[in-house]
Image 1 (cartoon, rainbow, N blue to C red):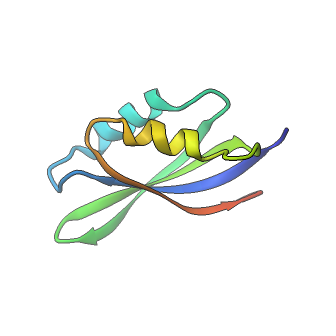
Image 2 (cartoon, one colour):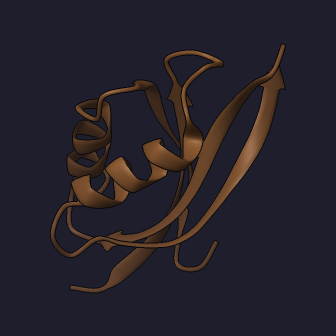
Length: 89
Protein backbone atom coordinates (compact mmCIF):
# COMPACT_ATOMS: atom_id res chain seq x y z
CA UNK A 1 0.00 0.00 0.00
CA UNK A 2 1.08 3.54 -0.66
CA UNK A 3 0.85 6.77 1.23
CA UNK A 4 -1.43 9.76 0.69
CA UNK A 5 -1.19 13.33 1.95
CA UNK A 6 -3.90 14.70 4.20
CA UNK A 7 -4.47 18.23 5.43
CA UNK A 8 -6.15 18.19 8.82
CA UNK A 9 -7.59 21.14 10.73
CA UNK A 10 -7.41 20.83 14.51
CA UNK A 11 -9.45 23.28 16.57
CA UNK A 12 -8.23 23.91 20.12
CA UNK A 13 -10.68 24.01 23.03
CA UNK A 14 -10.11 27.71 23.65
CA UNK A 15 -8.17 30.78 22.64
CA UNK A 16 -6.00 30.17 25.75
CA UNK A 17 -4.76 26.77 24.52
CA UNK A 18 -0.99 26.81 23.97
CA UNK A 19 -0.64 25.72 20.32
CA UNK A 20 3.03 24.74 20.67
CA UNK A 21 2.21 22.33 23.49
CA UNK A 22 -0.80 21.06 21.54
CA UNK A 23 1.43 20.35 18.51
CA UNK A 24 3.79 18.30 20.70
CA UNK A 25 0.91 16.28 22.14
CA UNK A 26 -0.47 15.65 18.65
CA UNK A 27 2.93 14.47 17.40
CA UNK A 28 3.10 12.01 20.31
CA UNK A 29 -0.39 10.73 19.43
CA UNK A 30 0.40 9.98 15.76
CA UNK A 31 -0.55 6.40 14.87
CA UNK A 32 1.96 4.04 13.24
CA UNK A 33 2.54 4.53 9.51
CA UNK A 34 1.62 8.21 9.90
CA UNK A 35 4.08 11.07 9.53
CA UNK A 36 3.65 14.76 10.28
CA UNK A 37 5.57 16.81 7.73
CA UNK A 38 4.17 20.31 8.11
CA UNK A 39 2.21 22.56 10.43
CA UNK A 40 0.80 26.05 10.26
CA UNK A 41 -1.67 28.18 12.17
CA UNK A 42 -4.87 29.55 10.63
CA UNK A 43 -6.60 32.54 12.28
CA UNK A 44 -10.29 31.81 12.88
CA UNK A 45 -11.84 34.67 14.89
CA UNK A 46 -11.36 36.69 18.07
CA UNK A 47 -7.80 35.44 18.59
CA UNK A 48 -8.67 31.76 18.08
CA UNK A 49 -6.30 29.89 15.76
CA UNK A 50 -6.59 26.42 14.28
CA UNK A 51 -3.65 24.11 13.70
CA UNK A 52 -3.33 23.01 10.09
CA UNK A 53 -1.42 19.73 9.86
CA UNK A 54 0.06 18.12 6.78
CA UNK A 55 0.40 14.41 7.34
CA UNK A 56 1.16 11.30 5.37
CA UNK A 57 -1.16 8.33 5.96
CA UNK A 58 -1.58 4.88 4.49
CA UNK A 59 -3.96 4.77 1.53
CA UNK A 60 -5.85 1.82 3.03
CA UNK A 61 -9.60 2.14 3.47
CA UNK A 62 -10.46 4.50 6.32
CA UNK A 63 -6.89 5.84 6.35
CA UNK A 64 -7.60 9.09 8.18
CA UNK A 65 -10.15 7.73 10.67
CA UNK A 66 -7.48 6.36 13.00
CA UNK A 67 -5.65 9.70 12.89
CA UNK A 68 -8.83 11.69 13.56
CA UNK A 69 -9.67 9.49 16.56
CA UNK A 70 -6.13 9.77 17.94
CA UNK A 71 -6.18 13.58 17.64
CA UNK A 72 -9.64 13.85 19.27
CA UNK A 73 -8.24 12.02 22.31
CA UNK A 74 -5.50 14.64 22.80
CA UNK A 75 -6.28 16.96 25.74
CA UNK A 76 -6.97 20.48 24.47
CA UNK A 77 -8.44 19.41 21.11
CA UNK A 78 -12.05 20.43 20.47
CA UNK A 79 -12.57 19.35 16.85
CA UNK A 80 -10.70 17.57 14.03
CA UNK A 81 -11.58 17.91 10.35
CA UNK A 82 -9.93 16.54 7.20
CA UNK A 83 -9.89 19.43 4.74
CA UNK A 84 -7.89 17.82 1.95
CA UNK A 85 -6.74 14.41 0.79
CA UNK A 86 -4.64 13.43 -2.20
CA UNK A 87 -1.37 12.13 -3.57
CA UNK A 88 0.46 15.39 -2.87
CA UNK A 89 -1.16 18.36 -1.17
